[in-house]
Length: 347
Length: 257
Image (tube, rainbow over all chains, first blue to last red; front, side, top):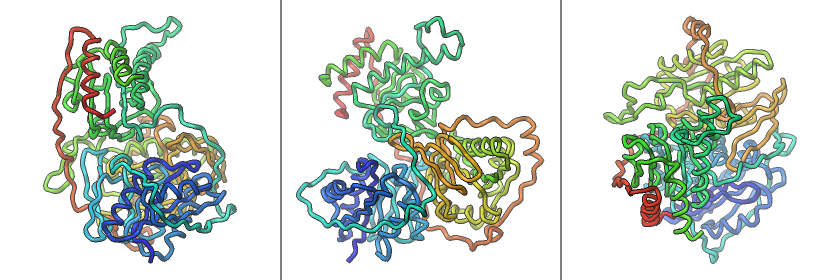
């Protein structure tokens, strides 16, 4: 009998994103509660190592759609492969990671399987086979309870919101290869290349984030004489602060974040933006430097476990959310803080 | 080239949200065009500026959605359509996608349909891919750069976790645009005047030619997030080195590293 709980593994170049194993591990728990097995679906190319890992993280059955035409992620053939794998199987719950690809594939699956999708949930409760999930809305300013009144109930899980997956090398399971569904000439999209992200840890995966705001431009150092434009001067000044922020982030194996004000002023690129129109993050440690704490920024980071704020203005709203605050100049505090952390972490 | 850009009305991102009597409230904050959708409008306008053609703004919502539509018109869209049907109150993403896809067909299709990355109210971000699936068109989501666009093909970069994926897709196509694409223009004075005078046809769901899709996803409860009990502790000292050392010890004590 087919399993009633399924999980989808998102991979890139045959490597699973960590959020995928959180999904498999959570799927295992839900399957146990329902007295069902867990089926894990992986779509891509060269997937044998992933199949083995999926079993270690909790799969009883692994379905692989493994074909050279699926090497690069493309929405249509992936969605078609997923719909083909589900076929006539009657499942209750299908979990996905909320990655860029996971979100997209799940959305398309909702159309193909004539159901709905609960996106980016942070909590799941089971009542019989019925899922009630909690998801942040308005970038976490509010929480919404959501249910899907059709089956399968498609759910994408927010990364780092569920239990940390632990592999068990002793587990066993079956691996079945399924045929690919779309022929290359039916696919109206080609992948022509990749440009790797600039170095550094990505914000969504980071367990530590060091962020900078407008306050980084509050720098007494003078820019080199060849910079004459006022806004270029300001950017230069702020970027010296982001160098210090990057130094601390490197020592902590963390990512560099920024407020919208810092991004809009051109200090750092948009990939670093935390907040309602940037990334919503929830690291274990968030160090805000020269960030006053606008409501849009707070919405994007307030669920961080420990918040540290360094700001010259004692009235800055960020201090209300901070476990530890330093009222002071980030240019004076950051270098000794980086040195002190380096010493304590024995780096 | 015919482009349809889908826009949504949302509470301003600066709004402090609350729940009153089980209903979501944004206080006296204004309703604005979804900030992500401004990038979508910008991309649509730049495409027609390069290729020739028109941009139609399409929105699903009530009377309030007119502000989002006016903004899109003021930025330079040539016409707009509002699907306004009280039966769509409480609609979920797939129901919205079905109505938008039907409206797009009713308009007579398009070469390109453009969306913002997601709406900042519901934060679902699945409408573009669902609409693409319903139309049977390629979905090129999270576009950070449009490299080239001809009458038959678009080349674009997509922002993914690992960096940028470069793709080439046959038209017609559904795009969603991210902020890296480039700053949206401000509405011009002439644009605002034109938008104020524009008449916006209103359609019901039946006008789009489909039966009312039912909501599959419902949200029985909305609540404020639990108050976080944070003990604030200000670290002080006689010099930055002393403050830094104290703060470093405190961070280590939290055992988050």
